[in-house]
Image 1 (cartoon, helix red, strand yellow):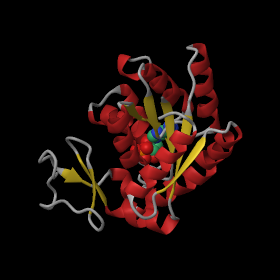
Image 2 (cartoon, rainbow, N blue to C red):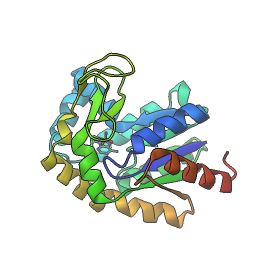
Image 3 (cartoon, rainbow, N blue to C red):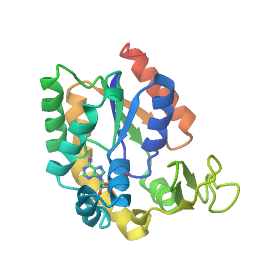
Length: 218
Ligand code: AMP
């Protein structure tokens, strides 16, 4: 089963993707995570991507598409995957269709995570992530037991550089301008499955699973 998960920054798409990855043994491909790991390791891709990411802008399609194509060719993707944070533009969606068609592959469903903007701003400004294992916390909604220390692995828990108020406003604007049209694009293909993540993630996951069952994917 090949899935895409779409949602505004802070909608909880990463968390939902992690639950689905574990439950259905999918490879979890987060373009944001791949960029962050390249930035941390100081690769040429990381150096180029950083200038865009720090402003809350999108990394150019050419760089992003070839990075995803390379990732999808790896062994762990052959049994199914969940794309998290990609595609983010119509050009990326079209490039994805092309690269999958070449392999005789396709996307089976597109999960659209819906949340109110006000909730999103709160969630993103309070979000903290573990530098070591990537686990996500929130100072207001899901604090760590010990401040600054990951409950799961004991790693250092920090605020992402692009989670400040100004960058979040930019990221939301970018999302509405570029990514929202993707929902229409996939709606026309009959691929959208919606999950409301305004209350709790269990409700969202069960709505998604109902949608996947309706498509006989699980
Ligand atoms: P995320 O972790 O998904 O919120 O992504 C963090 C940042 O990485 C975004 O604000 C963009 O600057 C960049 N990024 C991630 N995925 C993409 C993509 N598909 N296209 C362009 N830029 C991306």
